[in-house]
Length: 316
Image: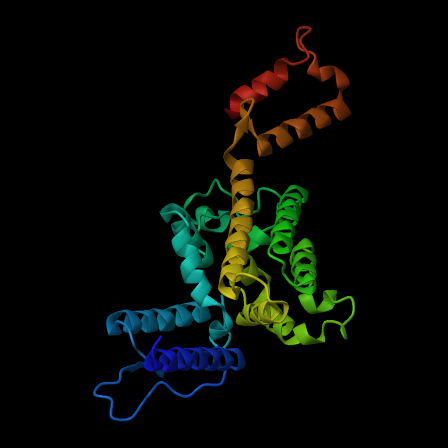
């Protein structure tokens, strides 16, 4: 290399080190320089790309924040604390119909028994699994039915394997999995085994509890979990980045919620041997009542199964 090339090469290395140090320490100068011909800012941030896209995204964020606040999904003061950047990418990774289901679910417009009972008087506003009254969208992730909780517990095991595969901070893995295994019955702060050991996570835990169980299961993780992951990657020199980790977590939480929805639908609609799960339970209850009142009532013309087949035929 000639002298000029040597100088340029040395300058590039110095600049590269300076950039890495600036990003690592979060210390750098503003990108707004004097004498610029045109400077466009949206919500206080300078726009370097398409103004149309930036304005549309800022408007959409404001509308979503007001909607979530009015419907008491997320308070507007907590709305900026959610890692929405990751949610945008996660939604794009799903099929169109799954995105539609997520949008309806978080907006509380899915066809739960609360909604269906408004136009169909034959449908009772109760959970088909635990018989809890007022079966709303929020109940999907709060049902106390043993089968529903068993499904979630299996999902948590799979999530734990993924977190360990991604070399997640063991303390964060423990916090998340323990919290999920309590099925929303306890706040994360109350589950800390040793508060002094987990002191550096306290701010993230408090924000997590403010956002709540339902939002977490709908993929709305706080930005503080992402910051903790970024710092962990830097300290332990791990591969990957915090955005990829956050998106993986959000995707699995949304799939966990959909599993609860699928389980409920199977209870109501899936038929085995001509009967749904609810109808099978009714049949067993009827048999128990018959046996309690008169054991011989089940025998009709020497055929013990006659009434049972008749019952299943009526329910098809």
